[in-house]
Amino acid sequence: MTKEDKNLFIAAVILGLGLLGAVDGIVFHQLLQWHHMVLNPNIKLEIITDGLFTAAFSALLIWGGVKIFQDARHNKLGHSWMIFSSGVFIGGGVFNIVEGIIDHHILQVHRVRPAAENPLLYDLVFLAIGVVLVIIGFLIKRRYQSG
Image 1 (tube, rainbow, N blue to C red):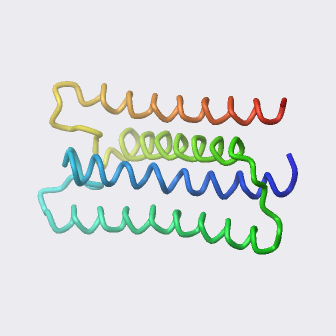
Image 2: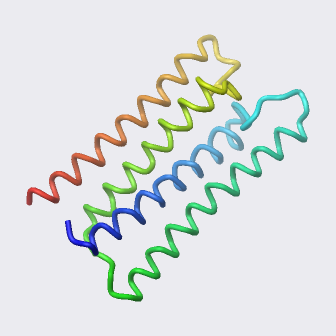
């Protein structure tokens, strides 16, 4: 992989992390209202932690965009859609895996759907989606590198 492709891949991973964070926050926290970042009887605390979560994934999206702009400006950015998409899939999958393991299992600050009959099933599906996204990303990257 060239230095330019590596720069594109890194930016795409950062964007993938931010993108899946946005999907998580928008879909699970706001639209479906399955959970907040921290489940607590104090709604103000729940809203503040959701806001901090939104700020964090927004910062990742900005960082990824700035990295692309800076690398492109210095002629140090690859242009392969396969490298870009592989990075987005891997970054998004890593988001699901890390957020799922840390928040759902280790810290237990929330579950994907705590009011469900079997909340563990939702947590495991969330992790499985992350693993599938990472695998897809690596398959795309491998295909690019072998072709």
